[in-house]
Image 1 (cartoon, rainbow, N blue to C red):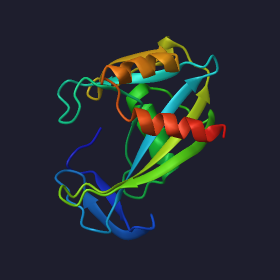
Image 2: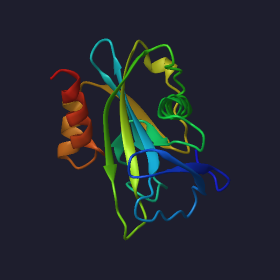
Image 3: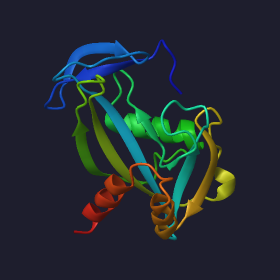
Image 4: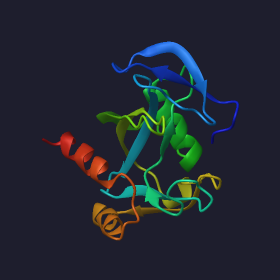
Length: 174
C-alpha cells in the first residue's frame, strides 16, 4: 500500500538507478526517467492462477481483475519488490517458491509523466484458498482459476494486462 511518504528510485532509459528518488504521490517523470513496476503471475502446481479484483475506490480500473503487483520502493530490487507486493496483497510468502523473471518491458508517457519499466515474474507454488489473505485496501476479492477463465474475463474487458501476461507466459516455453 502506498502513502505520501513512500519514495521510488528513478531509473534511466537503460534501467539503471540514477541515484535520485521521487515521492510516489503526485510524481511526474521527465523524458529518460522511469520508475519500476512488478507483476506476479502466481500459478499453483495444478495449473490454476491466483487473480485479485481491484478495490472499487482505485483511481484507475476500479473493480478490474488482475495479478498482484505494484511499484518498487526506493532501494528495493525488482525481486524484493515482487515478493513484498505479493505478501502485502495476498498474504502469501512466496520467497521459497520457484520464481522466474519471464518478461520485462518499458512504457513512456511523456504527457502524463508516467514512464516505467515492468518486470513480470512467474511463481510456481502450492497454496490453498485458506492461505490467501487479500489486502482490503487493494482488492475486494480473489479467485484461483484456470487460464481459460482469465481469457474469458479479458474478453469481457474485465482483466488488466492480459496481452502482456499471455506474452510473458509464452516466453517460458518457447
